[in-house]
Image 1: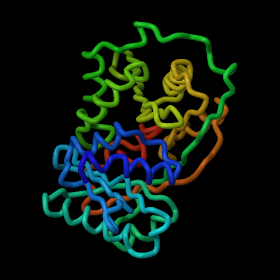
Image 2 (image 1 turned 180 degrees about the horizontal axis):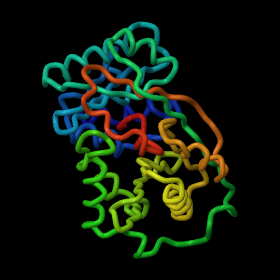
Image 3 (image 1 turned 60 degrees about the vertical axis):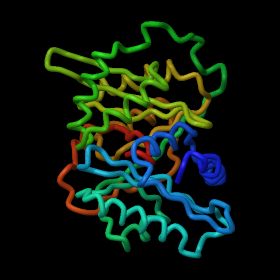
Length: 279
């Protein structure tokens, strides 16, 4: 895949109803262009798959899309096999992805195992339900505090994804948030503006009240009518908070891994993921 293929990738994600933007495709291509692939038929892109490696210790597989007109012909499987072969070639010890129920059996045949369950929850708001509050300068977190959050995220995620999260922060700095006490960081979150919704994630907290404060602040700062959260069922309270704030269940996902999972991170602290495309 090259930058010239991004419009084709956007066409496929629009057909699928996904929330990604051109910036998300660029993040993959900037991180590792050799690990991003397209399938073409008569010169037209009919499928995509992309990978991103985090410091060589863990890799992510995402953006697996196939044109509905060409499904059932092995396009998706061929792309996945190509992506896996690339990651094996560069000696990545463990690869992960978030699978839909339809995709899960395919990934299992390729050697992926289930790690934990995720649910997408969606909030749909009317215009008058959005707080009339313009963005303020104090919404933007100072960079030294962002770096403290990135250090904490290495433990939670299981690998250093600082470059990716800095990119997310630079695009939407108003969504980066953190709470501290005398012992350190209590909770933190990032967010993105997708094609049809604002997306909260990663959203991390050890305790319910800091998690609630982070979620409430995100909803105040978001100006979109639709907000999505990919909630992990490893958190004892995240789903309860989403229900409290009016979110409704959309669909399930399964976090899966291939290889030796030496980098599980701290999923019990994870209220929501960055997104199925990035982990």
